[in-house]
Image (tube, rainbow, N blue to C red):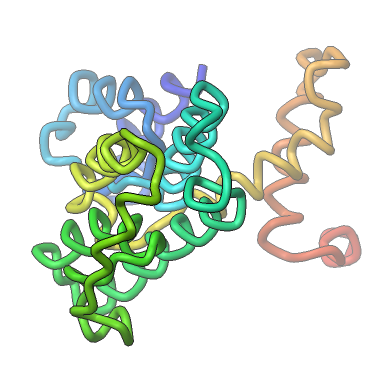
Length: 222
């Protein structure tokens, strides 16, 4: 249903608003974007912008998964919860920093180097990103669990491959906020709201709540 709604919105953009949507913010799911390129008349001109929050969340889930599958990867010199959080925060910081300058070429380097930086290896750090740039730690990888840094680099390569789509530092927060409020309005999947426009009325109420704030009822009444 989500795919059909978005495709319909793209198809009606010219008739309703006199414009074409050139960019689409989405998560890691590529099926919606594929449907837009196939079914929308100008779909081949639409570019996908990756949601930074979803990309970082997916990367974090990957780090947590390998620690569960390999008990030796956790511990003082491995992937502790604090270190996982620091790595993800560093990647988000790199995306935010390079989005202001639109430096697509530099972002992949910092994304790939971020795990090394958080483990204490600053050999490839940039001076603008790290105050210890250039300092080597030869004993670092000897203390780390065998195979850990290779597994982390493999996960990092996935997010590095999306650097061009992440450079804008965009998120789907506005959409997520609306959907959260809409679910509160219609009761989620617990109630049948399809008769007599009940579901549509609640969608409109959620939109008014997002646009006008908590006092939307008073504004509508007036």
